[in-house]
Image: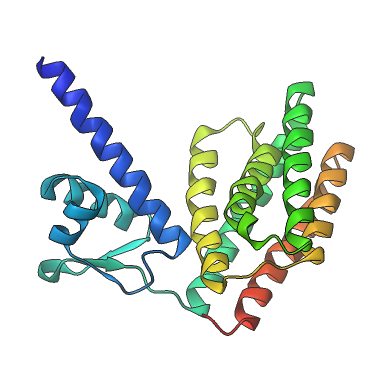
Length: 223
């Protein structure tokens, strides 16, 4: 029975962690929001001690700021931080994609093909004005970029990239709009270069892709 209780507690903690983290990335918990433990307890159904652990974990990802005796708040958003996150994403993703292109097998190609197909379908729907697909697009955007680097051979690199990617995507969610045909064109180019195993060209394209995303987010005036 004790083991069952422990598993239940771990399940509640994991669910609360994913929900709070997801709400921060989606902007439901906006930058600067005070994270009061009693409020979070009622909203996410986790104990105060569990919530402290969750918030400290999120602080290690720079999604939450610990304020000492004053508690926690959602990490602020700024142009300077966006640029830092973008540079870190480019560094990690460029390295991982070179490794992945060098060692990717037929299964890797299949993952990339499938991920790009799903992403392109959602992007076409967004271009037709179906803005309710934005959350889906965020998921498929990550799935595509993750597929590109999935043969890099390092779970540590993949996990670190995923964390940084989410911090980058949070800015797109705060900007609350889709970049349009340009981002779809970028993804098609990245896909084609991956299939050609053209490492230098895909890293160059990735750099312009990420920088264009930064420029677009800043152009919305919401950061």
